[in-house]
Image (cartoon, rainbow, N blue to C red; front, side, top):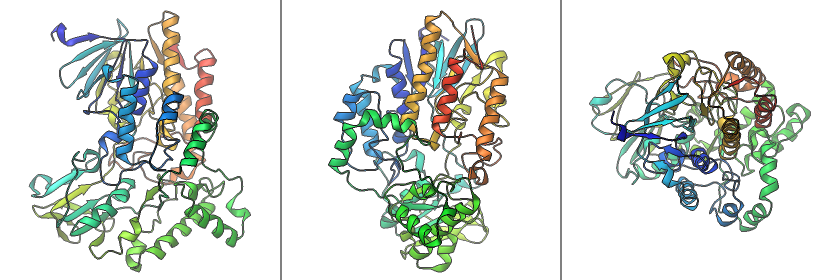
Length: 533
C-alpha cells in the first residue's frame, strides 16, 4: 500500500453515533479520527429511518449532559423524540462543537491488526485508507448490525424488500400495495400502524408476540422543559444513581404486599402513566419474582384482549412464553388497535414457519401469500455483531471472532484479553440498552478517556486486561443475571435471536450504579485486572 494512503493518528474512533461524537469532543487534545460507515452522524438515529421510529426515553433525559449551554439552548418538540428530531440534534452537536473535521464519512472499517512490536493498531477501511494509531475506541453500538435470515428464494422474489435498519432516506409509498411485514419487535410495533393506514393490505408475520404499552407521547410541556433546564445539573447526577440511568419512579413494595384490587389500581395507573417502562416497575419484584411478574403479564394480556376485537387474533398477540420485561418492553401507538382494521391480517409463523420467498411473495408451511413489498424487521446481530463483522486481529494474530466463538468475554465490558489498546463503549457485558444510552455512553467515554490520559501522562504505551479479570467479570455478569427473570427470555440480550449464535447473557443487569462502581474501583485499586506497560 502506498504511504500516501497511510495516516498516523493517536486514536481511531469507530462510529459517529452519540457515543462516538462525544468521544471526539472529549479527546480533542489528541490527534483523533472517527471512521463512520454512513454518510451522516447519529448512529442508530441515522440508519433507522423507518416510519414511526421514536425513542422510548424522555427527550429531556435522552440527551447530552456534558455542556450546559447545549442543554439550555436545545428545545425538544415532544416528550419522546422522533427519529428526525434525534438526527437533527446529532447534526446540531456535530456542527456546534466542530466535530465533522475529525470524521471520515462513508468509511466502514473492514479490518484491523495490532502490531505487538510497536503497540499500535493498523486500521483499514473498505475505501482503501489505512490509519496507524495507538488506541481504538469502538463506539459501534449495540444495535447496528442488521440481521437478515437466509431465506431461500429471496433472489427470485419480484417485489421490493426493505430492512427497517436500512430504510430509504426518501421514504416508501405503500399506496395500493400488498405489504408483508416480518417481525413484531419494537421496530415493527412502531412502523406497522403507520404503514397499515396507507397500504392496500398488510400481512403481519409473527413468530413471537410482544408485550407493548402505550407510548404516552405528546407535545413537550414548556413548564416541564423549563423545570428540567433549571435543574439539569442535579438531575444528571441523580440519573447516574438509578438502575437504568433514568429518572423513572422505582417502587419499594412487592406485588405480594397488595390486595388484588390494589394491584389492579397500581397497574392501571402504570398503563396510563405516559412513561414507557412504568409497567415493569409497578412493583419492586416484577423482574425478580416469577409470581409477581405473572400478575403483570396477565394484566398486559387482558389489555390486549380488551383492545383486539377478534378473540383468536387477540390470543395470538398475547405473549405466554417469557416474562414481561425479559425482552425489552415495547412502546407503541395504536399497535393492538391496528389489528381491528379490515386490511390487516396476522399470520402465526411459530406454528407454520416461513419456508421461502417465491417470485410472487412468501410461502409458509401452511399457505402462500402474494405480496408487492416485504419489510423485514428481523432485528440485529446485537452487542457483538458490529465488531465481529470487522476482521480484528490481536496478539499472536488471534482473531476476535475466534475468541468470541462461544460468546463474548470482556472485562468490565471495556476490553477483551489479547487485544490491547482496544476500548469498547456499550460493549458486551455493559448495561447497554438496560440503561439510558446517551448518559451512560458519556460516562463510559469519560472513564475511558481518563485511562488514556493517565497512560499518556505516565509515558505508558500499552494497556490490556487479564484472562483472570475476564473470568471474574463473567461470574459477576452471570450472578446478577441469575437473580433476574431476564434469563428466562430468548432475546438479543443473549443472542438467541440469531440462529446458531452461542454464548450466555451479553448485557449487565446489575444496574448502572453497581456497574460504574466496579469500573471506578478497578482503576482506583491500582488498575486491578489491567496490565499497563
